Length: 136
Image 1: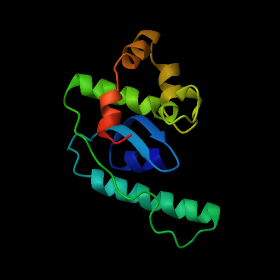
Image 2: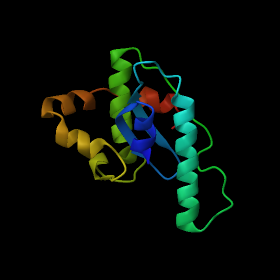
Image 3: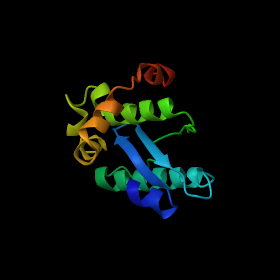
Image 4: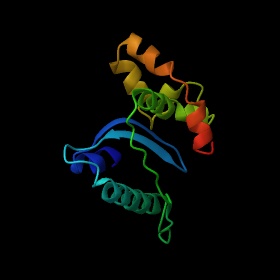
């Protein structure tokens, strides 16, 4: 659902982490720009809510996730820190000892597909200030 919803409008997901009460995504906008982001997020929220309602038998729920915030990443250091933050989010919240163990996160795929040097480089970018900024 996450992948298809973004791909339908030409977005390329680079990092993602889906938790029970929130999610994080680092994605590249389509060549025409980021104008479709609101539409993509609204569709994702609607589909996820409907699916969860069906799975847990709670048909009256109208919203699973309440809002979203976008950040246009323009500086390489911010971008790399966000990649690390998203990959490490399940561990940051104490859900798993290693982020790559969280099945709904890109950390395992990143670790498997990237070179060890690139994994180490991304892991070297601190995300403490990002977490503080996000209220976590």
